[in-house]
Image (cartoon, rainbow, N blue to C red; front, side, top):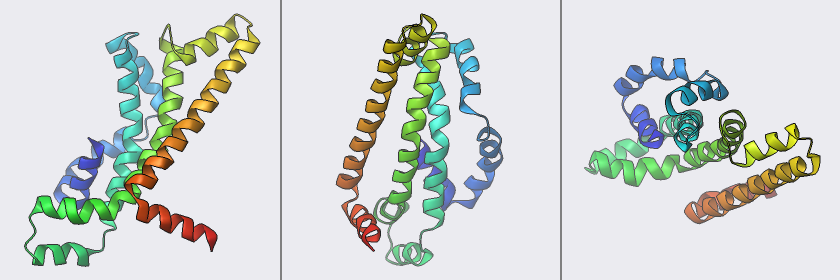
Length: 185
């Protein structure tokens, strides 16, 4: 949802101006503050976690996509228009490839935010999940179980980051190569 929205806002100034105020008003809201509101509307169900994650992960994805589109060399867009490419083809063949590194950055930033908010949501408003397990273990003074849950979270976070890097490498091999080359310099 937020990748297409970021592309539209980046390409069309009217769209950007129409949504800028709403986005800039919602963006500073700390994601954990959304949990009580989501609990009120969705209860202890999984939908509550989904709403909280959706709200909090949207900003890095949207803003990185928007930034990526805004920083596309205008010569590329003008050349595509000169060759008669439709708006759809310009988006698929010029815009997405050009801003895909920024989109991946937004997704990567959102990944740990997702994990953090799932855990917080489970601690505050759930009766199951790793967050609930850690908090329940702490409340019952089962320190070993609490640390085991924290270790499981650390391993999960590491594994998710590893999988994300593999996906990044597979989807954008040219960008991954540039990153590796820059690190070697």
